[in-house]
Amino acid sequence: MAYGAHHSPTPPPHPDLGLARDCEHCLGWGTVITRDGVHELCDTCQSTTDGDEFPPPPFPYRRSSG
Image (tube, rainbow, N blue to C red):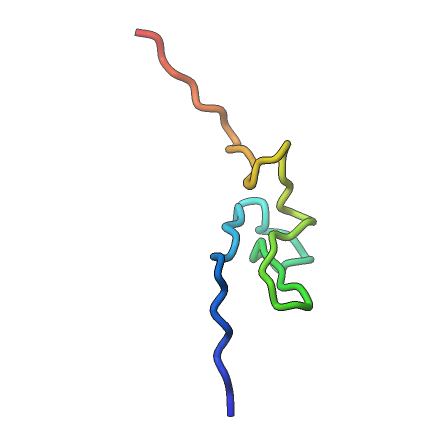
């Protein structure tokens, strides 16, 4: 008999799929599942910055003067 996955108290992380596209470690998903069954961002293609949970956007947003 097959059983469904256990419900997690926290939602899975949201990877940047643009960074994950050609990653061979996570096969383009951007996340990996640990031996404990926990979703984590792929440490090969999803880099975190100075305490941020997600990588910065590729282009900085500029405010127009006027």
